[in-house]
Amino acid sequence: MGLPVVQWMHSGGFAVGGLDQNEEYLRRLCIAARVVVVSVDYRLSPENPYPAALDDCRTVWEWIRSSPVELGAADVENSALAGESAGGSLVFALSCQLRDTGLPLPVAQVSLYGGATMEITNPEHETVLLSPADCRWFWDMYAPEGAPRDSPFVNPGLATDLGGLPRAFVVTAEVDPTRDGTEEYAYRMQAAGVPVELQRYDGMMHGFATMITVLDPARELFERIVEYLTRVLSPTLR
Image 1: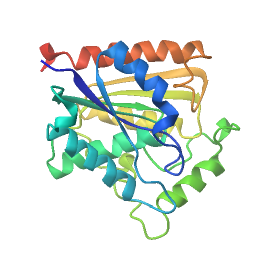
Image 2 (image 1 turned 135 degrees about the vertical axis):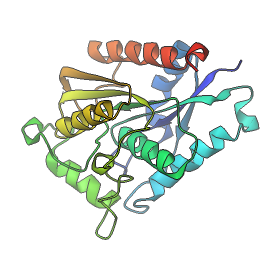
Image 3 (image 1 turned 90 degrees about the horizontal axis):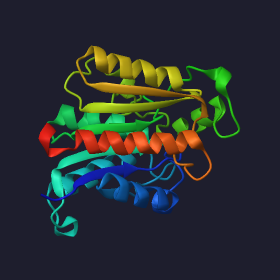
Image 4 (image 1 turned 60 degrees about the vertical axis):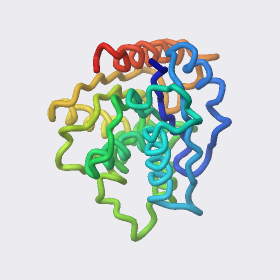
């Protein structure tokens, strides 16, 4: 049986970033978790506002599930979605969209402090890396006036029904202006019967997860992600 597949969506507020920013991190993840990683170079706002990024992520997911020759013998039915920050938000949104449109669901969703709603729930946790003003600036570019911000494909936390979503590993950072909104989404998924593992990293700021060369908590989180993916993508659980 081939290796499982993880579709990765990068951070950057839907407006910056690309394939290069997580290359070393994802190479390590491939080796440690024994997975094939497909990293999505989704279109960026403001030139390409919603739904461009989500459309690109769904297109890549459908490509993975089509068993393309480029993935060789990979076990494409044993696949997960994962992402950091804006990429983590896309994980939530894409999971909702796949469920609601009847497309194949991932085995699991892994979101590293991806905002579940476009809402500032912790304004006291402003940092130079992410402030409430930064969040609003990114959101206004991604979902400008006229965009359906009440849609769960933009704001997953506004979904009235969270049942039937894939199991989830949700990571939050203590120092994050959107922390409580994301944790509330995780609790609501749990209440709807979704197996959810929620982990807050106290003392850590939004953006810490991929800093594994300099932060001990990032290295510990990396090991937890490896353990989670290894466990939930095990053929014995299917």
